[in-house]
Image 1 (cartoon, one colour):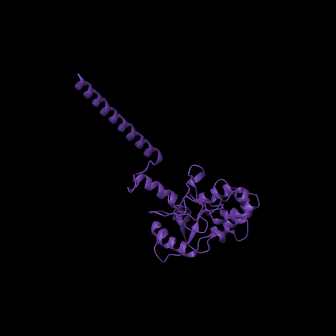
Image 2 (spheres, rainbow, N blue to C red):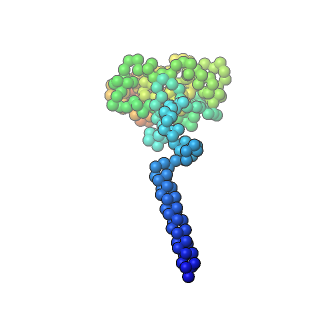
Image 3 (cartoon, rainbow, N blue to C red):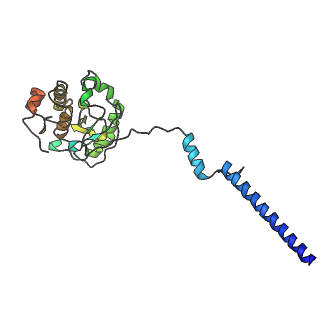
Length: 249
């Protein structure tokens, strides 16, 4: 009887010790998890933690090229919105086929692009200010590289052909320097369109034509500068004279 009693007491003592150890281990584990959820001392942090810490410690780097913000559905005639003052952006991929005997660009390759920073509200401090275009025109090194390296091959123009790298929507009407707005206009330099551009700029700055209407019109029919939305008479005698001969779309 005494022997069984001693064995029972011994078993209870061992059980109590085991329970105590389990409680201690659980407490230590909870303390470790609460105080430091990372890896144990000396162990490398997880790849997720490393990535997150790296992202926070690294300053954001500017994009190598300016972003091209496309809003085809926002403007008529498929014009794009691209803010890229002083630099050529985008790429021109052919094959492209000029229309109207080489007087109009390929609509797919050169739909036209405008700078969204130029609005009707600020024309007097931008496109109507003398010397504005020189503040946003890309350097010749960029335009020549684009002209001969991308535009000529895309439009199938032989090397040595005289042409002007034309802004479909001109800078003086808030045009962008994106590839969607540039094309090699074959012929004499300067060409008749330059006079049309100046006349439209004057009409916009004098309040005869809105900026948006002028942009859409010249993108649609850049030779007359009138298309079907701007009356030729409003753009001065030059535009009126050229507007007598509407070019095919």
